[in-house]
Image (cartoon, rainbow, N blue to C red; front, side):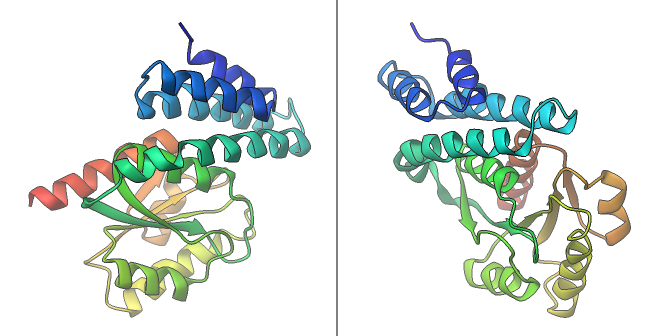
Length: 215
């Protein structure tokens, strides 16, 4: 019987094909898709992020791991699509203007899908206008934005101000996340939710969307 930790360890080594083979085995052995994500891909990438922040590995190693992650996500996509439900709620997600680092955003996106939320991924370097247009079009509960650089964090504040100007502040919550982002910064700019990691982001998004549906 496969141990899901094997997926996490393979991912940390950047072994894309091996990671995909292990995921296929996990699916065949009828592991829950959410568990494959949480204890396999998410756990593996979280360790890579931790080591990178402590300067134990370099960005090139992170990018190799991210390639393996993306391949694993593509393999799981049909199952994730089946899990998604607009009834639970929709999240619009992207990295802020000027920021092209998508690792954390991708992790958040895949984990939210695993929770059964409908996720509209706008990609990288998304302007405030695009976030707002998508939120209105998709009737989103949450706009989730990430920043990997301190120089792009001000665009999070600009997004909050743009949402207020668009008179959507009472209709959509704004979630912020990323390596340089803190709970204090979230409070200072007037955002609603601070996610320190992908698992927390998914749990908070699900809880909020469920409470809104129940209300």
